[in-house]
Image 1 (cartoon, rainbow over the protein chains, first blue to last red):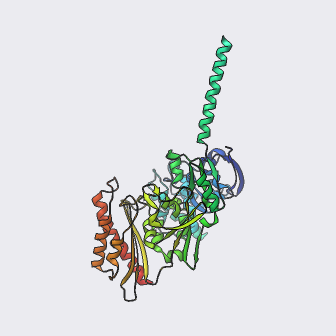
Image 2 (image 1 turned 90 degrees about the vertical axis):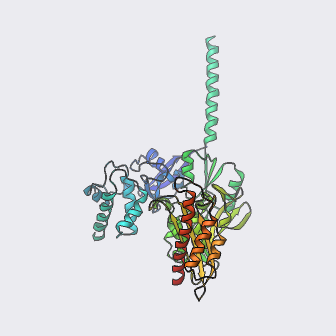
Image 3 (image 1 turned 180 degrees about the vertical axis):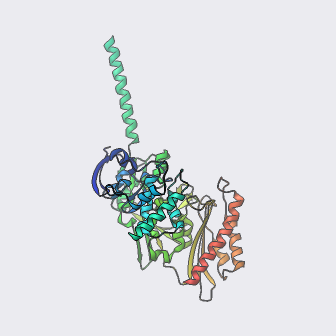
Length: 158
Length: 313
């Protein structure tokens, strides 16, 4: 059958693409729109490396069909920095060395941003539970949690 | 001679290509977004290999793993009645395709049925809850589904739509075995009905997993109870998960509470009844003996939480 024609908004820009039913939103972002910041770790919703916002809700792009994006609003890591100005979370991840290989980082940043928008002053426990769906095999999480807490403090005074 | 061989080769190639075309056609999957329940029921009834898509957190994993090969994916999320949380004269209604994260954020529903919210907030990660739905958690029909024992305890009823039909079915009557439901071809769940909680009532859900987050229940227990003005339990329901081929409504466990002050003796009887109802499997997450024991412990703790809530309402 013919491919699905989908019109959606990605990081504020209206985009159109064609996809087959089995192509996930992650496949579409990476292979059709060339937004390769979102990573494929497990392709089964366990690792969070493909975390994106869909209509303001944190989801795994690997568990959304590309066709489901019709008329919706998608936000990815590519929209996080404003030009050359990094988001406070990105800045703090650099300062705290909260990444090593970097595969999990786009997903962690998107998930952390979603948390701080909902809860600007989270406890460490809340950060750890919120990010339980983002697996990192390098850092041991401590640096990530510290970077998120520090960014939250900076954003509260901004 | 050469041209004859070439013709034979070409015909073999075209046969081969036709075969590939046919195989690809067999693998092609249609995607449909019906706008009404009757349209959805008709699609599901008329097509072999039609699969329902709600949150996709089970379907897309099975699809990727090759466990299912749908011909048509029927996305139910464009049907207005499947989305949202409402309150009316009959109590609460939750659209079957409402994301669990949305339900958890609903302050009034959380106040009414905190145990149900405890259950659905244990389904996967933040990301999973952004998509996962109560309809999907139920119809995936896992014995360990976290929202199901709490919904059973709460007395939730499903609105089931089919071709030209609508019926109401208690949650405990939907799952018939691992991965199997009592829904007929063409049927799907539109929403869940929960009554307004009575005065001096409370519900709670607890599950046991070997870590603190992101795991499948070894045992899950939902308890809902109602007290009278003197503090005697007048009504109770107990739902058990992950200890049998299906989640269970355990009448004997409820009987252990009714007519008591939910004191230590009643809690002990409740634990014994919950353990006695278990028919679990041995697997890497827990042995039979362990699951039976833990079901009793969790039933007691869950009932205590429900009691605390009931005394505060």
